Image 1 (cartoon, helix red, strand yellow):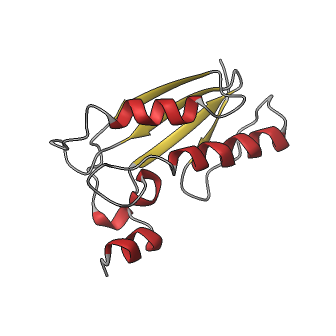
Image 2 (cartoon, helix red, strand yellow):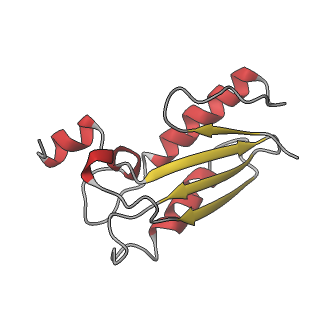
Length: 124
């Protein structure tokens, strides 16, 4: 079984990986950076700050699995956002493959947005 590291909320247990810690840290930072380049065409905030990314797993084989959601199940960008995420993460040096899954469990709400996103959208 291949071990993975997740980019999730703090306080997750440390997972052993065969990827050296410095490389794993770089991959993590670069993947988050790549996710921050993807915008919902109707919202002037990137999908990472919007809280649309629920989970990112990096396997020892450097394959990346992204679990994300959309602001609504009827989101007009539903057809294009997953491929935009796949393209952005695939461009990260060292990533061998990317799989993007959409989920609506739990449903997205504004509470998932970062303070930066709230400030940009003037939602306080």
